[in-house]
Image 1 (cartoon, rainbow, N blue to C red):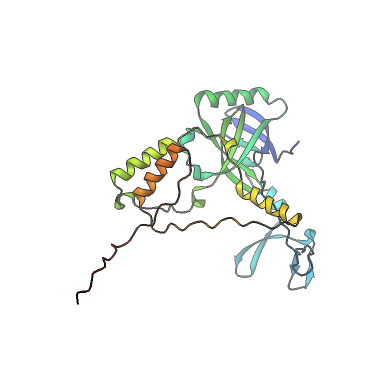
Image 2 (tube, rainbow, N blue to C red):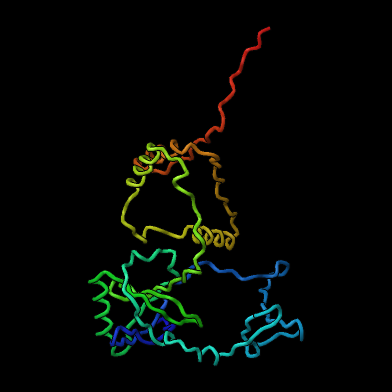
Length: 278
Protein backbone atom coordinates (compact mmCIF):
# COMPACT_ATOMS: atom_id res chain seq x y z
CA UNK A 1 0.00 0.00 0.00
CA UNK A 2 1.60 3.32 -1.06
CA UNK A 3 2.00 6.00 1.59
CA UNK A 4 0.19 9.32 1.29
CA UNK A 5 2.57 12.15 0.42
CA UNK A 6 0.20 14.84 1.73
CA UNK A 7 -2.90 14.96 3.89
CA UNK A 8 -5.29 17.82 4.48
CA UNK A 9 -8.66 18.91 3.15
CA UNK A 10 -10.43 20.33 0.12
CA UNK A 11 -12.33 23.55 0.80
CA UNK A 12 -15.45 23.70 -1.41
CA UNK A 13 -17.29 26.80 -0.23
CA UNK A 14 -18.39 25.94 3.31
CA UNK A 15 -17.87 22.22 2.68
CA UNK A 16 -14.67 20.59 3.96
CA UNK A 17 -13.49 17.29 2.50
CA UNK A 18 -10.65 15.50 4.34
CA UNK A 19 -8.36 13.88 1.77
CA UNK A 20 -5.01 12.17 1.25
CA UNK A 21 -2.75 12.66 -1.76
CA UNK A 22 -1.06 9.75 -3.56
CA UNK A 23 1.23 9.70 -6.58
CA UNK A 24 -0.56 8.54 -9.75
CA UNK A 25 2.54 7.71 -11.79
CA UNK A 26 5.87 5.97 -11.24
CA UNK A 27 9.20 6.05 -13.05
CA UNK A 28 9.94 2.65 -14.62
CA UNK A 29 13.27 3.61 -16.21
CA UNK A 30 16.19 1.19 -15.79
CA UNK A 31 18.60 2.77 -13.30
CA UNK A 32 22.38 2.52 -13.27
CA UNK A 33 25.03 2.98 -10.60
CA UNK A 34 28.24 4.90 -11.25
CA UNK A 35 31.25 2.53 -11.04
CA UNK A 36 35.01 2.93 -10.99
CA UNK A 37 35.94 1.68 -14.47
CA UNK A 38 39.26 0.11 -13.42
CA UNK A 39 37.98 -2.07 -10.55
CA UNK A 40 34.18 -2.07 -10.89
CA UNK A 41 33.51 -0.71 -7.40
CA UNK A 42 30.39 1.38 -6.83
CA UNK A 43 31.36 5.02 -6.31
CA UNK A 44 30.23 6.91 -3.22
CA UNK A 45 28.97 10.46 -3.45
CA UNK A 46 30.16 12.48 -0.47
CA UNK A 47 29.15 15.89 0.85
CA UNK A 48 32.61 17.47 0.98
CA UNK A 49 33.49 20.77 2.64
CA UNK A 50 36.45 22.32 0.75
CA UNK A 51 37.18 24.76 3.63
CA UNK A 52 37.44 22.25 6.49
CA UNK A 53 38.44 19.40 4.13
CA UNK A 54 36.04 16.97 5.79
CA UNK A 55 33.00 14.90 4.79
CA UNK A 56 29.82 16.52 6.15
CA UNK A 57 27.00 14.34 7.61
CA UNK A 58 23.38 15.17 6.77
CA UNK A 59 22.67 16.49 10.29
CA UNK A 60 25.30 19.23 9.77
CA UNK A 61 23.86 20.54 6.48
CA UNK A 62 21.69 23.63 5.99
CA UNK A 63 19.72 25.11 3.09
CA UNK A 64 21.26 28.32 1.82
CA UNK A 65 20.03 30.86 -0.73
CA UNK A 66 22.84 32.68 -2.56
CA UNK A 67 21.78 36.35 -2.61
CA UNK A 68 25.24 37.56 -3.70
CA UNK A 69 28.40 35.85 -4.95
CA UNK A 70 29.56 33.58 -2.11
CA UNK A 71 27.01 35.02 0.36
CA UNK A 72 24.08 32.98 1.64
CA UNK A 73 21.03 33.34 3.85
CA UNK A 74 20.18 30.03 5.55
CA UNK A 75 16.72 28.64 6.26
CA UNK A 76 15.83 25.96 8.80
CA UNK A 77 12.99 23.44 8.70
CA UNK A 78 11.19 25.67 11.22
CA UNK A 79 11.38 28.58 8.74
CA UNK A 80 9.65 26.49 6.09
CA UNK A 81 6.98 25.33 8.53
CA UNK A 82 6.20 28.90 9.61
CA UNK A 83 5.46 30.11 6.06
CA UNK A 84 1.95 31.66 6.16
CA UNK A 85 0.49 29.46 3.43
CA UNK A 86 -3.04 28.05 3.90
CA UNK A 87 -2.34 25.67 1.00
CA UNK A 88 -0.01 23.64 3.24
CA UNK A 89 -3.08 21.97 4.72
CA UNK A 90 -6.04 23.08 2.60
CA UNK A 91 -6.80 22.85 -1.12
CA UNK A 92 -9.18 25.78 -1.56
CA UNK A 93 -11.09 25.60 -4.84
CA UNK A 94 -10.86 29.05 -6.42
CA UNK A 95 -12.58 28.61 -9.81
CA UNK A 96 -14.21 26.08 -12.11
CA UNK A 97 -12.99 25.91 -15.71
CA UNK A 98 -13.44 23.88 -18.88
CA UNK A 99 -10.66 21.28 -19.05
CA UNK A 100 -9.89 22.14 -22.69
CA UNK A 101 -9.13 25.72 -21.62
CA UNK A 102 -5.90 24.50 -19.96
CA UNK A 103 -3.08 24.08 -22.48
CA UNK A 104 -1.36 20.68 -21.92
CA UNK A 105 2.02 22.45 -21.65
CA UNK A 106 0.97 23.61 -18.15
CA UNK A 107 0.51 20.07 -16.77
CA UNK A 108 3.38 18.86 -14.58
CA UNK A 109 2.54 15.78 -12.46
CA UNK A 110 -0.53 13.67 -11.68
CA UNK A 111 -1.82 12.62 -8.24
CA UNK A 112 -4.85 10.81 -6.87
CA UNK A 113 -6.94 12.33 -4.09
CA UNK A 114 -8.53 9.78 -1.78
CA UNK A 115 -11.17 10.61 0.84
CA UNK A 116 -10.02 10.31 4.43
CA UNK A 117 -12.22 9.11 7.28
CA UNK A 118 -15.72 10.69 7.17
CA UNK A 119 -14.89 12.30 3.84
CA UNK A 120 -16.60 9.84 1.48
CA UNK A 121 -19.93 11.69 1.07
CA UNK A 122 -18.60 15.23 0.38
CA UNK A 123 -15.89 13.68 -1.82
CA UNK A 124 -18.54 11.84 -3.85
CA UNK A 125 -20.60 15.04 -4.05
CA UNK A 126 -17.70 17.03 -5.53
CA UNK A 127 -16.78 14.17 -7.88
CA UNK A 128 -20.33 13.87 -9.20
CA UNK A 129 -20.69 17.64 -9.60
CA UNK A 130 -17.46 17.85 -11.64
CA UNK A 131 -18.53 14.90 -13.79
CA UNK A 132 -22.04 16.23 -14.43
CA UNK A 133 -20.89 19.76 -15.27
CA UNK A 134 -17.80 18.51 -17.17
CA UNK A 135 -15.61 20.98 -15.31
CA UNK A 136 -12.26 21.07 -13.51
CA UNK A 137 -11.46 23.08 -10.38
CA UNK A 138 -8.37 25.26 -9.98
CA UNK A 139 -6.64 25.59 -6.60
CA UNK A 140 -3.22 25.73 -4.91
CA UNK A 141 -1.37 23.13 -2.84
CA UNK A 142 1.94 23.22 -0.97
CA UNK A 143 3.95 20.02 -1.28
CA UNK A 144 7.70 19.41 -1.05
CA UNK A 145 8.36 22.95 0.18
CA UNK A 146 6.71 24.59 -2.84
CA UNK A 147 3.27 26.09 -3.40
CA UNK A 148 1.94 24.91 -6.74
CA UNK A 149 -0.98 25.83 -8.90
CA UNK A 150 -3.15 22.76 -9.43
CA UNK A 151 -6.37 21.56 -10.99
CA UNK A 152 -8.78 18.90 -9.72
CA UNK A 153 -10.59 16.81 -12.32
CA UNK A 154 -12.76 13.68 -12.30
CA UNK A 155 -11.21 10.50 -13.68
CA UNK A 156 -12.77 7.03 -13.63
CA UNK A 157 -14.51 7.36 -10.26
CA UNK A 158 -11.78 9.36 -8.55
CA UNK A 159 -10.62 12.96 -8.24
CA UNK A 160 -7.21 13.56 -9.74
CA UNK A 161 -5.00 16.48 -8.78
CA UNK A 162 -2.72 17.76 -11.53
CA UNK A 163 0.03 20.18 -10.53
CA UNK A 164 0.53 22.95 -13.07
CA UNK A 165 3.47 25.13 -14.04
CA UNK A 166 3.10 28.86 -13.47
CA UNK A 167 3.04 31.05 -16.60
CA UNK A 168 6.58 32.35 -15.97
CA UNK A 169 7.84 28.75 -15.91
CA UNK A 170 6.71 28.12 -19.49
CA UNK A 171 9.40 28.86 -22.07
CA UNK A 172 8.64 31.12 -24.99
CA UNK A 173 6.91 29.33 -27.84
CA UNK A 174 8.97 28.32 -30.85
CA UNK A 175 7.69 27.39 -34.26
CA UNK A 176 7.07 28.93 -37.65
CA UNK A 177 4.96 31.74 -39.00
CA UNK A 178 2.46 29.65 -40.97
CA UNK A 179 1.43 32.57 -43.17
CA UNK A 180 5.01 32.93 -44.46
CA UNK A 181 5.47 29.23 -45.34
CA UNK A 182 3.96 28.21 -48.68
CA UNK A 183 1.99 24.94 -48.50
CA UNK A 184 0.11 23.82 -51.58
CA UNK A 185 -3.52 22.68 -51.57
CA UNK A 186 -2.40 19.24 -52.83
CA UNK A 187 0.03 18.82 -49.93
CA UNK A 188 -2.62 19.92 -47.43
CA UNK A 189 -5.22 17.55 -48.88
CA UNK A 190 -2.80 14.60 -48.69
CA UNK A 191 -1.94 15.55 -45.10
CA UNK A 192 -5.69 15.53 -44.28
CA UNK A 193 -6.04 12.11 -45.96
CA UNK A 194 -3.10 10.68 -43.99
CA UNK A 195 -4.50 12.05 -40.72
CA UNK A 196 -7.93 10.49 -41.37
CA UNK A 197 -6.35 7.11 -42.20
CA UNK A 198 -4.34 7.13 -38.96
CA UNK A 199 -7.11 8.59 -36.77
CA UNK A 200 -8.28 6.28 -33.97
CA UNK A 201 -9.28 6.43 -30.28
CA UNK A 202 -6.37 6.78 -27.85
CA UNK A 203 -5.59 3.44 -26.20
CA UNK A 204 -2.57 3.69 -23.84
CA UNK A 205 -2.28 -0.13 -23.69
CA UNK A 206 -1.18 -0.09 -27.33
CA UNK A 207 2.10 1.70 -26.53
CA UNK A 208 5.32 0.32 -25.04
CA UNK A 209 8.64 1.76 -23.92
CA UNK A 210 10.77 0.30 -26.73
CA UNK A 211 13.94 1.96 -25.40
CA UNK A 212 13.55 0.31 -21.99
CA UNK A 213 12.85 -3.08 -23.59
CA UNK A 214 15.89 -2.82 -25.88
CA UNK A 215 18.07 -1.76 -22.93
CA UNK A 216 16.85 -4.73 -20.87
CA UNK A 217 17.74 -7.07 -23.79
CA UNK A 218 21.26 -5.59 -23.97
CA UNK A 219 21.73 -6.11 -20.21
CA UNK A 220 20.41 -9.69 -20.44
CA UNK A 221 22.71 -10.45 -23.40
CA UNK A 222 25.74 -9.13 -21.50
CA UNK A 223 24.82 -11.21 -18.44
CA UNK A 224 24.66 -14.33 -20.63
CA UNK A 225 27.88 -13.49 -22.44
CA UNK A 226 26.15 -13.06 -25.80
CA UNK A 227 27.07 -10.63 -28.53
CA UNK A 228 25.07 -7.42 -28.48
CA UNK A 229 23.40 -6.86 -31.85
CA UNK A 230 23.41 -3.27 -33.06
CA UNK A 231 20.35 -1.69 -34.60
CA UNK A 232 20.56 -1.03 -38.35
CA UNK A 233 21.58 2.49 -39.27
CA UNK A 234 18.71 4.72 -40.35
CA UNK A 235 18.81 6.21 -43.80
CA UNK A 236 19.34 9.97 -43.98
CA UNK A 237 16.50 11.21 -46.12
CA UNK A 238 18.13 14.61 -46.60
CA UNK A 239 15.93 17.24 -48.20
CA UNK A 240 12.64 15.48 -48.94
CA UNK A 241 10.09 16.03 -51.63
CA UNK A 242 7.19 16.76 -49.27
CA UNK A 243 4.43 15.85 -51.72
CA UNK A 244 6.13 12.54 -52.60
CA UNK A 245 6.66 11.71 -48.92
CA UNK A 246 2.98 12.38 -48.20
CA UNK A 247 1.84 10.30 -51.20
CA UNK A 248 3.94 7.31 -50.11
CA UNK A 249 2.77 7.71 -46.52
CA UNK A 250 -0.89 7.64 -47.61
CA UNK A 251 -0.30 4.52 -49.72
CA UNK A 252 1.48 2.78 -46.85
CA UNK A 253 -1.26 3.75 -44.38
CA UNK A 254 -3.90 2.27 -46.70
CA UNK A 255 -1.92 -0.98 -46.83
CA UNK A 256 -1.25 -0.92 -43.08
CA UNK A 257 2.53 -0.83 -43.46
CA UNK A 258 5.25 1.66 -42.61
CA UNK A 259 6.41 3.89 -45.47
CA UNK A 260 10.02 3.69 -46.64
CA UNK A 261 12.05 6.91 -46.64
CA UNK A 262 11.24 9.09 -49.63
CA UNK A 263 13.88 9.88 -52.18
CA UNK A 264 16.04 12.91 -51.60
CA UNK A 265 14.82 15.90 -53.51
CA UNK A 266 17.20 17.53 -55.93
CA UNK A 267 18.10 21.09 -55.14
CA UNK A 268 18.95 21.90 -58.78
CA UNK A 269 18.33 20.32 -62.20
CA UNK A 270 20.79 17.72 -63.41
CA UNK A 271 23.14 18.84 -66.12
CA UNK A 272 22.70 17.32 -69.56
CA UNK A 273 25.67 15.71 -71.17
CA UNK A 274 26.56 17.38 -74.46
CA UNK A 275 28.48 15.68 -77.22
CA UNK A 276 31.61 17.55 -78.11
CA UNK A 277 31.65 18.35 -81.81
CA UNK A 278 35.07 17.98 -83.27
